Amino acid sequence: MFVDSHCHLTYEPLSSNLPEVLQKCKEAKVTNLLAIGTNIKSSTECSEISNKYENIYSSIGIHPCESHIEVDRDIEIRSLYNSNNKNIGYGETGLDFFHSQEHKKRQIDLFETHIHYAKEDNSTVIVHTRDSDDETLSIIKSHTSSKNIRFLIHCFTGSLSFAKALLNLGCYISFSGIVTFKNTLDLQDVVKYVPLDNMLIETDSPYLSPQPFRGKKNSPENVVYVAQKIAELKKINIDEVGEKTSSNFFKAFNI
Image 1 (cartoon, rainbow, N blue to C red):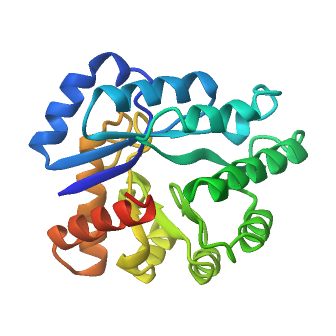
Image 2: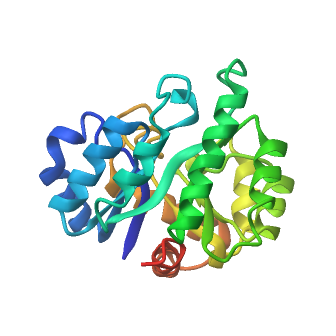
C-alpha cells in the first residue's frame, strides 16, 4: 500500500489519461492520490477530479510563483476548499525566492492567508519552500501553537539542519524521486535521519521522475520507486515504508 501525497493531475500527460493512470496505480498498489492545486483554475479542476474518483483527494491553493498573477482572488481559496469534503489541504503554497524575489511580500502575505484559512478549517498546509529557509521557519513557528493546523513540507531538498528545525516544529516532510538520483547524497542523509513517523512520499508528477525513468514524464505509480529508495537507505522493508507513509498521510490530512 502506497500513497502519492503530491501529484499534478491537471497537467498533461496525466489529465487526459486519468483512467490509465489509476489502473497503473492499482497494479502498483498505490491506493490514494492527492491532486495538488497551484492556482484557482487548477484547484477547481482538482476538486472536480476528486469528486469523480473515489481514491483521489484534492488540495486548494495558489503557488508562490503565481502569487503575483492570481491577485484579488485570495477569498476564493477558502470558498472553493469548503465546496467539497475531499478537499483536504491548502496549497501548494509557501515561498520561492529562487525564481524571483520581486514579489516577496506578496508571497509571504499569500502564505499567511493559506495558513489562516487552514487554522479556521482544522486543515493542513502543503508548503513549497525554495531559497527561503529562514522565512519559512519563522512563519511556521509563529503558528505552531495552534492544534488546528498541520504543515507538510513538500518535495524536501533542503539541508539536514533545515530538516531538523522543521521536525522540531512538528512538521511532516515529504520526499520525491529526487532521492533516487545518484548525486543527491546529502539529501539521502536527510532521509536516513528523518523518522518514518514524520515522513510522506510523493512524485510531484509529471515532474521529477525517479531512476530509472529520469528525463521522462513522471506518473503517480512511480511513487513506489521513492519508497524503495527510502527502504534501501533506512535498511528496512519497502512494505514498512509504504504502510507507515500511508498511515502518516491519513493522519497528516486528518482523514
